[in-house]
Image (cartoon, rainbow, N blue to C red):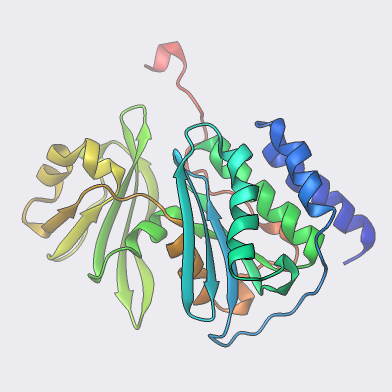
Length: 269
């Protein structure tokens, strides 16, 4: 990639996050100016993947280090831009690793908080452009499914405004296949699934458990409450992806919004 593309990408990545969180600009600049360029990527399971997620009120960072995973997490509320990079720096320091020595960067691409998705994507792009590392966005819905040991998972995340982000996954040969593609809907209109023995999880089930239980009836074997995306599952999912799934050009990485509107107009409420 030409130098001009690197410069444009770094500015784009920083702007995506700093546009909503101005305090991130100086923090990000302070860090990436001293990052080391040392690109390499090995598709074997001996991988080092840095991952982070800011899609909910929690902020988490994780490191997949040759099969071992470490994670740090905190309830950030609105302090994600302030906390994320120090968390990344700390988790790398604990592993005695420089950022340029890892194999790739993964972030929670969404759906989730619009501002949070922009922060994660912007930081991932900025760090990737500064180091030459490949980057990948991982679905937060799939990250929630990854927490479960069962093979049939219905995920519902609270999307506010009386709606949920919904998807269903089936695990085959160790990888998740999409049984119902990610969608935004009312809980009572959640897409149907085939068969039984499904596990429901995600904040949508925390809030709309009665509605979703009625929607799926006997198809649901169990509801797992209190599930939200973590960086550790994002790291694991990224480590199992093919090299072609990563973006060598970080500007191609993008949030997964699903909802196109941030808020309803008065007439639509």
